[in-house]
Length: 141
Image 1: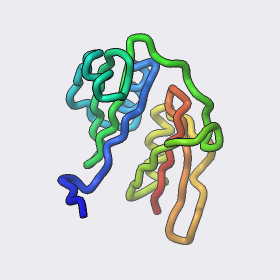
Image 2: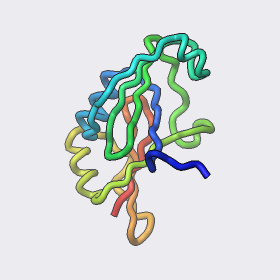
Image 3: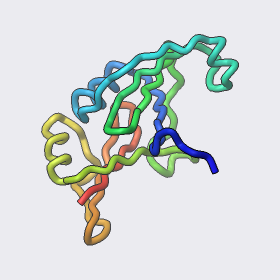
Image 4: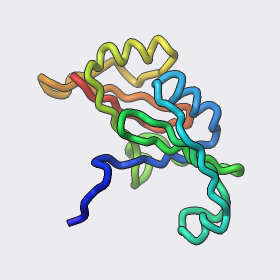
């Protein structure tokens, strides 16, 4: 069995507008920008991830890194919504108090798709979209 060096996954999110993404994830949601790594065209092609160069801006959130991937010539946006196409469609953040998180982020201008909805007696959920239209689920008591 594979032994993990970290018990979490990092998430790569391609964004068209890096400044808007930094404002949303950093200023509004409170993620901490850490390192920025340029990936040259040769490495991108050899790794099979892209045909040209791009930058990765790491945003730390607890033990998770959200990697904002930005191409100079950004690809067009795809369909939004969980039913827009197959593949990774949203990320989930677990919080200790969904009501206070919702109120804090709403006061900072985050637009939610609804108010928190009770899924089980112990758990609520609410979704929002980032500036690119990507879905983010918040779960918590």
